Image 1: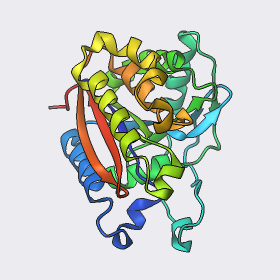
Image 2: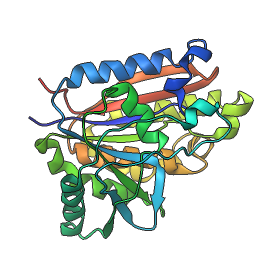
Image 3: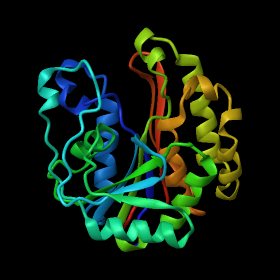
Image 4: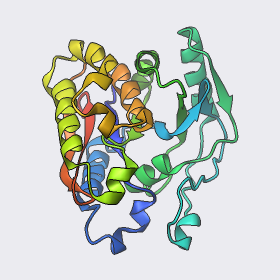
Length: 270
Protein backbone atom coordinates (compact mmCIF):
# COMPACT_ATOMS: atom_id res chain seq x y z
CA UNK A 1 0.00 0.00 0.00
CA UNK A 2 1.51 3.30 -1.11
CA UNK A 3 0.79 6.21 1.20
CA UNK A 4 0.22 9.74 -0.09
CA UNK A 5 2.38 12.66 0.98
CA UNK A 6 1.12 15.90 2.51
CA UNK A 7 2.00 19.54 2.86
CA UNK A 8 0.01 20.75 5.87
CA UNK A 9 -0.36 24.29 7.15
CA UNK A 10 0.34 23.95 10.87
CA UNK A 11 -1.35 27.12 12.14
CA UNK A 12 0.16 29.47 14.66
CA UNK A 13 2.04 28.43 17.79
CA UNK A 14 0.35 25.89 20.11
CA UNK A 15 -3.11 26.57 18.65
CA UNK A 16 -4.75 23.22 19.58
CA UNK A 17 -4.37 24.19 23.24
CA UNK A 18 -5.85 27.66 22.64
CA UNK A 19 -8.95 26.84 20.56
CA UNK A 20 -11.36 27.75 23.33
CA UNK A 21 -9.98 31.31 23.37
CA UNK A 22 -9.80 31.80 19.59
CA UNK A 23 -13.53 32.07 18.80
CA UNK A 24 -13.44 29.54 15.99
CA UNK A 25 -10.33 30.89 14.28
CA UNK A 26 -8.93 27.38 13.89
CA UNK A 27 -12.13 25.46 13.24
CA UNK A 28 -11.50 24.98 9.51
CA UNK A 29 -7.88 23.88 10.01
CA UNK A 30 -8.90 21.55 12.82
CA UNK A 31 -11.62 19.97 10.67
CA UNK A 32 -9.20 19.49 7.76
CA UNK A 33 -6.72 17.63 9.95
CA UNK A 34 -9.42 15.36 11.32
CA UNK A 35 -10.38 14.63 7.71
CA UNK A 36 -6.77 13.67 6.98
CA UNK A 37 -6.82 11.25 9.91
CA UNK A 38 -10.08 9.76 8.66
CA UNK A 39 -8.77 9.16 5.16
CA UNK A 40 -5.52 7.63 6.44
CA UNK A 41 -7.16 5.30 8.91
CA UNK A 42 -4.61 2.96 10.46
CA UNK A 43 -2.42 2.71 7.34
CA UNK A 44 0.71 4.56 8.57
CA UNK A 45 3.11 2.71 10.85
CA UNK A 46 5.24 5.82 11.44
CA UNK A 47 5.48 9.50 10.53
CA UNK A 48 8.38 11.32 8.91
CA UNK A 49 7.79 15.01 9.66
CA UNK A 50 9.67 17.73 7.79
CA UNK A 51 9.15 20.77 10.00
CA UNK A 52 9.68 24.37 8.99
CA UNK A 53 10.98 24.92 12.52
CA UNK A 54 14.20 22.92 12.22
CA UNK A 55 17.14 24.09 10.14
CA UNK A 56 20.71 22.82 10.06
CA UNK A 57 23.81 23.19 7.91
CA UNK A 58 23.16 19.66 6.62
CA UNK A 59 20.05 17.52 6.77
CA UNK A 60 19.58 16.01 10.21
CA UNK A 61 17.30 13.17 11.28
CA UNK A 62 15.96 12.86 14.83
CA UNK A 63 17.02 9.46 16.12
CA UNK A 64 16.13 9.42 19.82
CA UNK A 65 13.79 6.86 21.30
CA UNK A 66 11.73 9.35 23.33
CA UNK A 67 12.05 12.87 21.91
CA UNK A 68 11.62 15.76 24.38
CA UNK A 69 9.53 18.88 23.77
CA UNK A 70 10.79 22.12 22.20
CA UNK A 71 8.65 25.17 22.95
CA UNK A 72 9.88 27.36 20.11
CA UNK A 73 7.40 30.20 20.55
CA UNK A 74 7.07 33.24 22.77
CA UNK A 75 4.36 35.15 24.59
CA UNK A 76 1.79 32.38 24.96
CA UNK A 77 -0.01 31.34 28.16
CA UNK A 78 2.01 29.52 30.78
CA UNK A 79 0.18 26.23 30.30
CA UNK A 80 1.39 26.00 26.69
CA UNK A 81 4.92 25.52 28.01
CA UNK A 82 3.86 22.37 29.84
CA UNK A 83 2.39 20.59 26.79
CA UNK A 84 3.29 16.96 26.36
CA UNK A 85 3.22 14.90 23.19
CA UNK A 86 4.85 11.65 24.19
CA UNK A 87 5.00 9.76 20.91
CA UNK A 88 8.06 7.54 20.60
CA UNK A 89 10.88 8.11 18.17
CA UNK A 90 12.09 5.39 15.82
CA UNK A 91 15.87 4.97 15.59
CA UNK A 92 15.51 2.24 12.95
CA UNK A 93 13.47 4.52 10.70
CA UNK A 94 15.93 7.37 11.33
CA UNK A 95 18.77 5.15 10.17
CA UNK A 96 16.73 4.17 7.10
CA UNK A 97 16.24 7.86 6.22
CA UNK A 98 19.94 8.52 6.76
CA UNK A 99 20.90 5.62 4.47
CA UNK A 100 18.49 6.64 1.71
CA UNK A 101 19.99 10.11 1.68
CA UNK A 102 23.55 8.79 1.80
CA UNK A 103 22.92 6.38 -1.07
CA UNK A 104 21.65 9.34 -3.08
CA UNK A 105 24.73 11.41 -2.36
CA UNK A 106 23.07 13.83 0.09
CA UNK A 107 25.10 14.33 3.30
CA UNK A 108 23.06 14.07 6.49
CA UNK A 109 23.43 13.14 10.13
CA UNK A 110 21.55 11.64 13.06
CA UNK A 111 20.52 13.77 16.04
CA UNK A 112 19.54 11.67 19.07
CA UNK A 113 18.67 14.75 21.15
CA UNK A 114 16.27 16.64 18.88
CA UNK A 115 12.79 17.09 20.35
CA UNK A 116 9.36 17.79 18.89
CA UNK A 117 8.93 21.44 17.87
CA UNK A 118 5.50 22.99 17.48
CA UNK A 119 5.53 22.41 13.72
CA UNK A 120 5.39 18.75 14.67
CA UNK A 121 3.46 18.46 17.92
CA UNK A 122 0.64 20.87 16.97
CA UNK A 123 -0.15 18.77 13.90
CA UNK A 124 0.41 15.41 15.56
CA UNK A 125 -1.75 16.23 18.58
CA UNK A 126 -4.66 16.83 16.21
CA UNK A 127 -3.94 14.01 13.76
CA UNK A 128 -2.97 11.34 16.32
CA UNK A 129 -3.83 12.52 19.85
CA UNK A 130 -3.15 9.06 21.24
CA UNK A 131 0.58 9.62 20.51
CA UNK A 132 1.14 5.96 19.70
CA UNK A 133 2.71 6.27 16.24
CA UNK A 134 6.49 6.74 16.13
CA UNK A 135 7.55 10.14 14.80
CA UNK A 136 10.88 10.98 13.19
CA UNK A 137 11.73 14.54 12.17
CA UNK A 138 13.86 15.65 9.23
CA UNK A 139 15.42 19.10 9.26
CA UNK A 140 15.59 21.56 6.42
CA UNK A 141 19.00 22.40 5.06
CA UNK A 142 19.74 25.99 5.91
CA UNK A 143 20.67 27.06 2.38
CA UNK A 144 16.98 26.56 1.48
CA UNK A 145 17.92 25.30 -2.01
CA UNK A 146 14.64 24.12 -3.58
CA UNK A 147 16.32 21.67 -5.96
CA UNK A 148 18.06 19.88 -3.09
CA UNK A 149 14.88 19.61 -1.05
CA UNK A 150 12.97 18.25 -4.04
CA UNK A 151 15.79 15.73 -4.54
CA UNK A 152 15.62 14.69 -0.89
CA UNK A 153 11.92 13.98 -1.34
CA UNK A 154 12.68 11.82 -4.37
CA UNK A 155 15.23 9.83 -2.39
CA UNK A 156 12.77 9.27 0.44
CA UNK A 157 9.89 8.16 -1.80
CA UNK A 158 10.47 4.41 -1.08
CA UNK A 159 9.27 5.05 2.47
CA UNK A 160 5.76 5.53 1.09
CA UNK A 161 5.68 1.80 0.29
CA UNK A 162 6.95 0.94 3.77
CA UNK A 163 4.10 2.42 5.79
CA UNK A 164 5.82 5.74 6.51
CA UNK A 165 3.73 8.87 6.09
CA UNK A 166 5.79 11.80 4.79
CA UNK A 167 4.42 15.16 5.96
CA UNK A 168 5.76 18.60 5.17
CA UNK A 169 4.73 20.93 7.99
CA UNK A 170 4.79 24.65 7.26
CA UNK A 171 2.43 27.38 6.10
CA UNK A 172 1.42 28.34 2.59
CA UNK A 173 1.80 31.98 3.72
CA UNK A 174 4.31 33.02 6.37
CA UNK A 175 4.95 36.68 7.00
CA UNK A 176 4.63 37.32 10.72
CA UNK A 177 4.33 41.09 10.31
CA UNK A 178 1.29 40.62 8.09
CA UNK A 179 -0.26 38.27 10.62
CA UNK A 180 0.21 40.84 13.36
CA UNK A 181 -1.05 43.92 11.52
CA UNK A 182 -3.93 42.31 9.66
CA UNK A 183 -2.39 42.82 6.24
CA UNK A 184 -1.27 40.26 3.72
CA UNK A 185 -4.69 39.43 2.30
CA UNK A 186 -3.83 40.29 -1.29
CA UNK A 187 -0.35 38.78 -1.24
CA UNK A 188 -1.54 35.55 0.37
CA UNK A 189 -4.38 35.18 -2.13
CA UNK A 190 -2.09 35.73 -5.12
CA UNK A 191 0.53 33.28 -3.94
CA UNK A 192 -2.06 30.72 -2.86
CA UNK A 193 -3.62 30.82 -6.32
CA UNK A 194 -0.21 30.21 -7.86
CA UNK A 195 0.35 27.28 -5.52
CA UNK A 196 -2.97 25.74 -6.50
CA UNK A 197 -2.24 26.26 -10.21
CA UNK A 198 1.11 24.51 -9.85
CA UNK A 199 0.25 21.75 -7.38
CA UNK A 200 -3.28 20.86 -8.48
CA UNK A 201 -3.99 22.14 -11.99
CA UNK A 202 -0.62 21.72 -13.70
CA UNK A 203 0.52 18.25 -14.86
CA UNK A 204 2.74 16.64 -12.21
CA UNK A 205 5.61 16.51 -14.70
CA UNK A 206 5.67 20.33 -14.73
CA UNK A 207 5.59 20.86 -10.95
CA UNK A 208 9.29 20.39 -10.40
CA UNK A 209 10.40 23.10 -12.82
CA UNK A 210 7.82 25.57 -11.56
CA UNK A 211 8.71 25.03 -7.92
CA UNK A 212 12.37 25.63 -8.69
CA UNK A 213 11.30 29.13 -9.74
CA UNK A 214 8.89 29.70 -6.87
CA UNK A 215 10.45 33.08 -6.05
CA UNK A 216 9.17 34.38 -9.42
CA UNK A 217 5.56 33.58 -8.48
CA UNK A 218 3.10 36.43 -7.84
CA UNK A 219 3.73 37.98 -4.40
CA UNK A 220 6.25 35.22 -3.61
CA UNK A 221 8.50 37.24 -1.34
CA UNK A 222 5.58 39.00 0.26
CA UNK A 223 4.18 35.57 1.13
CA UNK A 224 7.53 34.12 2.18
CA UNK A 225 10.13 36.75 3.11
CA UNK A 226 12.05 33.75 4.39
CA UNK A 227 11.10 30.40 2.88
CA UNK A 228 11.50 28.16 5.94
CA UNK A 229 7.76 27.42 5.98
CA UNK A 230 7.62 26.70 2.24
CA UNK A 231 10.56 24.29 1.89
CA UNK A 232 8.78 21.35 3.58
CA UNK A 233 6.48 21.43 0.53
CA UNK A 234 9.45 20.65 -1.71
CA UNK A 235 10.19 17.42 0.16
CA UNK A 236 6.54 16.34 0.00
CA UNK A 237 6.37 17.07 -3.73
CA UNK A 238 9.67 15.35 -4.44
CA UNK A 239 8.44 12.21 -2.71
CA UNK A 240 5.14 12.42 -4.60
CA UNK A 241 6.71 11.63 -7.97
CA UNK A 242 4.05 11.76 -10.66
CA UNK A 243 1.11 11.57 -8.26
CA UNK A 244 -1.45 14.31 -8.68
CA UNK A 245 -2.08 17.01 -6.10
CA UNK A 246 -5.32 17.82 -4.29
CA UNK A 247 -6.08 20.85 -2.15
CA UNK A 248 -7.51 19.48 1.09
CA UNK A 249 -7.77 22.70 3.11
CA UNK A 250 -8.44 26.23 1.93
CA UNK A 251 -9.36 29.26 3.93
CA UNK A 252 -9.57 32.89 2.80
CA UNK A 253 -9.90 34.59 6.18
CA UNK A 254 -7.41 32.80 8.38
CA UNK A 255 -6.47 35.17 11.21
CA UNK A 256 -8.94 37.62 9.69
CA UNK A 257 -7.44 38.20 6.25
CA UNK A 258 -4.97 35.54 5.15
CA UNK A 259 -5.50 32.88 2.48
CA UNK A 260 -3.95 29.51 3.39
CA UNK A 261 -4.10 25.98 1.99
CA UNK A 262 -2.89 22.42 2.53
CA UNK A 263 -2.30 19.76 -0.12
CA UNK A 264 -2.21 15.99 -0.52
CA UNK A 265 -0.22 14.23 -3.22
CA UNK A 266 -1.44 10.82 -4.29
CA UNK A 267 -4.57 8.94 -3.34
CA UNK A 268 -5.61 8.12 0.21
CA UNK A 269 -5.06 4.49 1.21
CA UNK A 270 -7.97 2.15 0.66
